[in-house]
Length: 191
Length: 191
DNA sequence: CGGAACCTACCGATCTACAGGTAGGTGGGT
DNA sequence: ACCCACCTACCTGTAGATCGGTAGGTTCCG
Image (cartoon, rainbow over all chains, first blue to last red; front, side, top):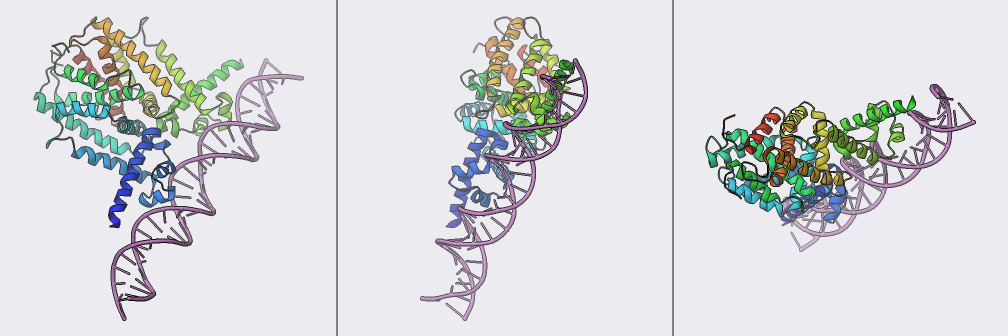
């Protein structure tokens, strides 16, 4: 079955692209270096993905598929699952680095991932709000509405990732995130 | 006075570089486009900054000088000044975009700004801890120590910036930051 | 059963476009 | 006379993309 082999190849390429983007960002990544990693020439790679941008899109879509499937509930995340997600991320610097690099680049003008991230963050905030509503109802202990707290939750995850990627020994990402959740819960008891 | 003119030119170049980096990131920025913006040729620019990396370093150093001087107290920031800093930032998307883009890129391997950001974040966390200690003493209302809360404060500022840059209409950055400060203060009264 | 027609998965050569950087000037101000 | 602030010309490298193959397999038809 030739189809299967081909799909496998594509998957290999996507994985390699993920690595290279983590190491150098999208702009710094070259088709040649991705190709090399899977034992192809640059032209061979272009047989699977006609342009560099198409490759990026495929990477982003795969990510989308990934976190629209595993790790989620019927109606989204739950707060304790978020906590384990952060722990999980702390064990895969590669993936975190890829998407942090892409997020960073995406804010520049006309970046091909910009639309993707803009859209995705609206969606993530909505998800987060729902998670919070599920956990706290219409008001968090602090008095904040889930909708107001959602961007904070999102920002915390991203912000911690940057600090952690720059200097993993200086920031215990999962612990810090737990501290934040503790804050959302209203503080009080000593951690 | 030629000296003055020269310094002025350098400053112009730095400002232009800031803009171009905001638009395309460091890797995407070209010497030519920076030069063009100040009415020079690329080679004319290289007269002032011998390499692209030297220009970047100068940009980073200027930033360092900027926020080691203005906006600070003798012993660092105060919490309410941080709040106005965020408000101030919300009025200068350009600058925020430059440094968010650079932060994003800097996590990739061998990026010339990586050391700068790593070092700077250790320092920022220390500053933040001191701000918090000044405001709350050795325990925040939540029971967290200033040192544990410092990375959270830092992460929140960065994380909100990305969301805001991607979609300013979707996130009221200053308001969100105030919400977070409210959280640090222990919540309670309704905003 | 054999072969023409076609498809898939590539590779080599090559094009175009910049990009960063160097060498060696020129011209105006002091 | 000199030097600072530039410029022109140029070199080298690299990146993405196109073109035109070729080798191997698959399909279909007589």
